[in-house]
Image (cartoon, rainbow, N blue to C red):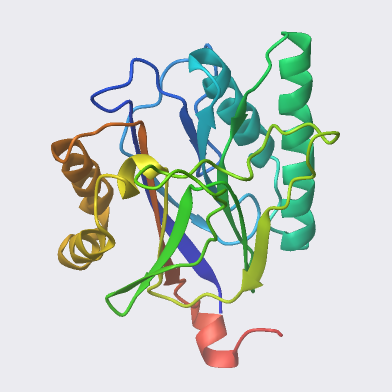
Length: 260
């Protein structure tokens, strides 16, 4: 059985930030520095396998530096192949993106710059997951929203959001990065939500789940964005939704079955 991914992505600077430091990868596209801006919502459909990769990156470390770190990660994620071992591909992505960000920072004499990463790789038989930082990945199935990523937080001050304990852009002589990696299966009808904390800091999970349950898929990303903005829009917001659907079998396959 083959599957297809329908995706819908929105990205917004928010109400309080002057610069958008978020980036993404979906449908092989990301926001490239110095290029024409992407028109949102960005939507489409592609088969699992090939370059079926979805990701969200939330840059940090100053205005242009955070934006650049997220762009470097998105650019590297565009080279992930869903035809190969997903865990190996994701490990290589984290290592390479981390090194490229550190090299850029050293070259430009930047003390600290980095980005979170939340990435899904849709292979033909399994799905690979990787996250580092606090950009999140949820699975929405049977009207239930479940976080399947793992947040990386350090001990913080009570009453304040804790700082990150992991991100891309950490020199190896300071700390070895330790992204969360997992592999699993997917089913037709599953919806995956990848987002920066500009969404989850502005909306409770129960409201996110209700919105996904009550809104047609094609409109859901924009509806979530509008609610996050209505609730304050204090940070950049990136929302990427992926819905898994079975491909229709051809007449030959219906009559004779697929080759295993």
